[in-house]
Image 1 (cartoon, rainbow, N blue to C red):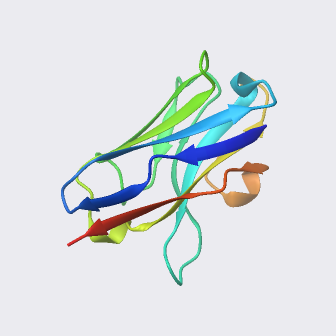
Image 2: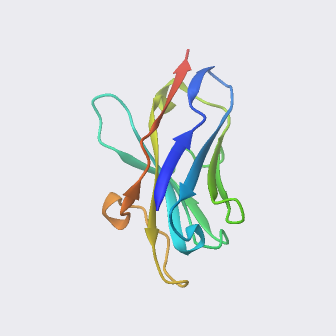
Length: 126
């Protein structure tokens, strides 16, 4: 599946943004999905993941209670609602997906995903 991330931008500390990731060219509903991010000079890290049906999610401790991942399989879109943003959230955000069986668990590692979007830049000013 081809993935296209959007929704990044410049926001002040404490602000909110919603990222979107549109899937095309495949059956989006059979993909487990996730958001990763990469800050300048740092490794790409897991942010949040969601199962095929959207019935289970997980997120990194650094964003827990601030970021919410969700998906709409009828529209082939993955979302990341980001609230209470901090300067340390500044990064390029990537959506990722992998075709899995229905009972597959959530994945938090980069090597658990095959398809990647191009990234969208989020900048949080202090």
